[in-house]
Image 1 (tube, helix red, strand yellow):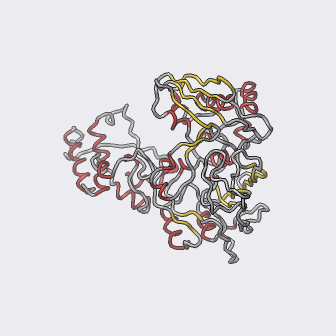
Image 2 (tube, helix red, strand yellow):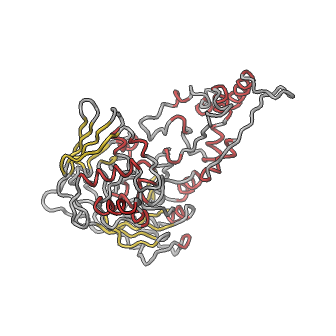
Image 3 (cartoon, one colour):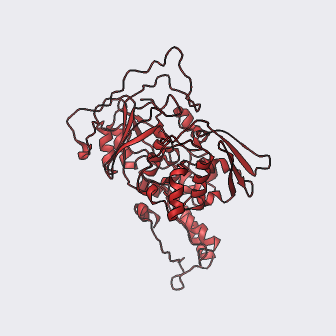
Amino acid sequence: MSRWTMLLVGLVAMLALVAAACGPGEEPAENGEDPAAIPTVGMDITDSTPPTPATGGETMMETSVSGIPLDPDARYGGTLLTSYTIESPYIPWEEAAGIAFPVGHLLNNMLIRPRTWGTREDFSNNAFFEFKPDLATAWESSADGLAVTFTLRDGVQWSDNTPVTCNDIKWSYDTLRQSRGLRRSPRGVHFKAVDTITCPDDLTVVFNLEYAKPAIIEVIGQPYNVIFPAHVYEKEFNDTGDLASMRDAPSSVTSGAYRLVHHTPAEAYIFERNDNYWDAPLPYLDGVQMQFLSRTNVPVALRAGRLHVGNASGYTGSQADTLLQECSQEICQFWPRVIASSFSPAMFLNKNREPWNDPAVNEAFALAIDNQNYITTVRDDWYVLPTGCGFYPTSPWAMPAERCGQIPGFGDVIGTTTPEQDKERARQILVDAGYVDSSTGEPSLDLTLAIWQPIQVDAPAFI
């Protein structure tokens, strides 16, 4: 297996607290241990030794068809063993998390996509935020910023031999931006600047904008925006106004690097290599097997050598600490501590109601939270900074820590203030704003919290 497999496509946006990922080419441990009674569904998960490297003939290709640099040390063949912890509908356009993303990216392509290859130095330098060709070979913006034109790759076909054309791109983006047939479209608002999507010909797509949007390329290239075949689903939507079949089962007509050959809900997915994949000579792997495991069992399976990759989205602080102690570097690769948006909890104030529409109350509230206490007690010291300062160091929009420390409530993180100083300042702000208990003269303000279930563990630290 290569250091960078095609499984990483679309997971860039979901990196969170990455602690460890199993190294390539390792033989799983044969120690008789059966961690957490992992279901195998007839899969031989112990036979994963990769074959000898492919020779490639007299001249070796330096890149794939789409321009991805080929790893000269890559081994072709073998099966990647990974896991998933949540069953969900299969439309990445209407989901915020779940199995839709890894399944969607193994089976289909995007118009353009985030970069998914490079070194750890590239990772640290935010190279994975660059956008690269996929179904599109090139794109350009008009001088006034009101149109973006994409040139599509000629000769790409769906698995039923239907050509991939502009209509597939137009239908996919019109569906996700207008929520047509979807239960919801969490990112549809990102496309408000788009007026129409037009097809001058089968291999040209034009996004026409009502007003210039500097981030339109980033919006179009979000990893959620997997392209699906219009000729398969357009009639269903026209007939029923819904896309139930897309939601209920993975797509059977695909364009991607793998084909789904077996699926048992809440148990396993088995994918095999698409030998006719247009982006030759990729993929490196013969197949991918995903096993359904609980979050607590994934690190156990990883430490025992029964998985090559555990949680693609990372681990909790306590799990990461255990892996660092028990998983040797001969078995596991350890990555830097990072933060990603999908795992950064936040507090939202209802600023349409009193007293939260008072800027003084907002400032006092920010100062009252002991951020370092939250980082230590809830996140086992695996956080860098809370959400308000961007997702440093993985985001190109993050602010330096020194600048974050100037924002009310963040000084205690970098040491320019202490939690005690911040709380005293918060009390004084409330007194000055008139929020005082008349019987005691002490600052007083009642607060009602609604806690989202996935972050209930955060509530005590916030309180």
